[in-house]
Image (cartoon, rainbow, N blue to C red; front, side, top):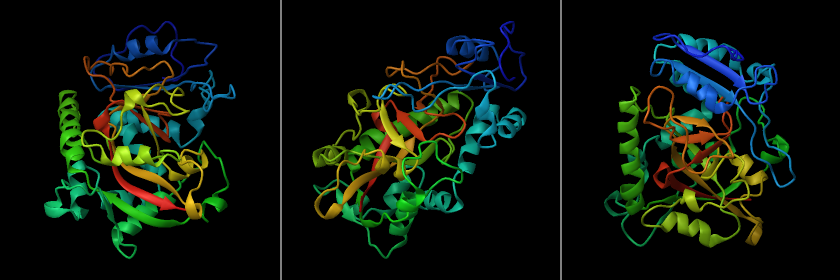
Length: 351
């Protein structure tokens, strides 16, 4: 259903339904809350709301993304319309089916690198070099050999660009091709993994099962990048904190109001670097960025009004969405609201 008519008050039971509506629709204006209430009238996991709304304002007064009007122009991008049709026919429900298609926006090389590094918290230990692979000593960073496969997989993720043009095109792709990784360090913080990341993983698995959905690595989890600015103490705190590396409620980056409060991550390293989130180059012109494993669960579209509490998932109350994104069609920015949802896995130094 494209552009929900104001007369539509309920959805049929037991029938998969996809709703697509723009936040700037002047012909059939509808609030996000009213559309979510309509979606909640469907059977559990039978409705997917593709809502296209505005981001918050940048310091310049502009918006990084502008939601659709009545024409729903975004349906013409990223094969969105045929993907929505397929989602309505998906055996596992339209929302889960559509989330799986997010991976189709990425290159085969990147997907292989993500699978090789691991898509669950426990898989990260396969590469650990600390005694017993426990990560319990004073040392938190371990060198990744430049000649090994692990190093190459990290490089592929760092250098990867999507199959389609990025929304936030800040510099030419030719300039990005000249950026080189000079060092990769693996983060081995067993206290953080056991005390924060894995408990969140277990809770997320239970919550998804309660909603009739099983956790799928690579769909409900993914790899993404986070910049810490030029202050080395910020990155050291994330890597070394024995309880939780990221503190979403305390996040105060300059883009933190665009899609609501939380910790922001980018699908591509290029966005983090081009956006200045790594700070000014240090000695020798080098900068650093974190490569993190995210546990997204089921995300919703972010909203500048979100303040740590996300909307309820339609028809599966009391469960809420577990993270948010900048676009439901092809997300490039991920926002997590829980400290256990993101685990710092690698520190990449580049110039």
